[in-house]
Image (tube, rainbow over all chains, first blue to last red):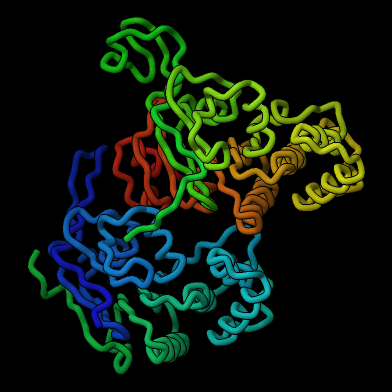
Length: 229
Length: 277
C-alpha cells in the first residue's frame, strides 16, 4: 500500500529584502510504500531537506501535492491541509528526526521523551514506562536520563531525538542527515536501529550523505542529482 | 475528512480605534494612523480562533496591537467593533463584548485568566498572596474559608511558590515570584482560556526558564488553551503550536510556529526572523 505520493512538488523562497526568488527543489515526483525505506541523495543545495520540510509542513510548498494516506483522515494533501490537521498528524503519525536537538529549558532527557506521549494525552505512568523502554532500546546510558541534554554528545543527542520520535510509534518517519558528524561506531548503531524500525513496519524517508553505509536498510535510492533543474 | 473542533475562543473583525475614524481611514493609513483624520487603529480587523488545549502565539513589535487584543478580550479595553465568542459562555452564541457588566465579570473570573506583563495590573501589591488568590475564588462564588485557603495553598504549590510565604504581600517578592503568583491567581477557577501577556519579559534567564517550564506543565496537566503574547521568538518557538504575526494593529501572517520561523512569507516576518540573535 502506498503511504505517500509526492507529485510536482516545487519550493521557491521569496526574500523581500533582496527582492529575490530562490529556487529549491523543483518538480519532484516520489512515492513511498508502507514499510519501505527510501534514501534521498544529491549535492548540497539540491533541495533534499526541503522535500522533508515540505512533508512536515515546516515549509509551505509553492506547487505540487503531497498525498499522505493517514490513519486519522484517510488520504490528505499535506500541501493544503489545515494547521490543526497537520498538528494532529505530527502528534500521532508523523515523526521527524534531525541531528539538531530542540528541547525545552530545564527538561531532562527522560522528560523530553515523556512529553511526546503527554502531548498525545497519555497518563504520566504510561509515558514514563514507555519513555524508559525507548531510551533503553536506543541505548542511551541510564545515568543520562535525568540530565539536561544540552551537554550531550552528537551521538547521544541523536539517540535522544530518535527515542523522542519513535516513542510515538509514527507510521511515517523522516530522517534528515541523522548520521552527519557521527563516528563509525555510532553510525553502525543507528543503522541497526533503523533496521529494527523497519522490522516494526515504519515507513521511512531519509537523507544520508553516505548512502552506501545504509546498504541493506535502504530499499530504494532517490537521486536528486539525476533530476533536471 | 478533517478535525471537527469547536474553538474555545473565536474573534472576528476586532477593531479598536482612538478617534472617530473617517471613510478614508483604511486607504490612508501610515502605520496604524489615518493621515486624513488622525484616528489611530490600535487593533484593525483582527480575526482568530483558539482551539482546545493549544497554545496560540502572538508576536509583533511594540505598538503592533498585541496587548490591545489581550486587554480587549479581558474587558480592560472596549473595542470599537467586532465580535468574540467563547464556547464556555452560552455555547458560543453571544458576543462577550455585548454581555452585561455582571456577565463580563463572571467571564473574567471563571472562564478566563489573565497574566499581565506588569504585575501591578494583575495583583494587589499590599494584600497577601493568599488574599489575592482568595479574591478571585470568592468572585466565582465560593464562601467556604477553609476550602479557599486550601485551594490557594494548592495553587501556590503548583507554581512552585513556597507556601510558607503565602501570607506575604507580592510587593515583597521578586519579579519572577510575582509572575508566579499572578499565574496561580489566573488559574484559581480552572479557566478554559489563559491570556499570557509577555510573562517572561524582564525576567533573568533562569527564572524565565522556570516560568516557561511552568506554562508547559499547565498546558499538559490541565489542557488549558493559552493565548501567548511575546516579542521573544525563542519563547514562541518553545511553547506555541501556531503563531500569529501582528504589525500596525493588523495580522500580517499566521501559521504553524515552525513554518512561521523557518519559512516566513511576509516581509515583516522575514525581517523579524532575520533579527534573531
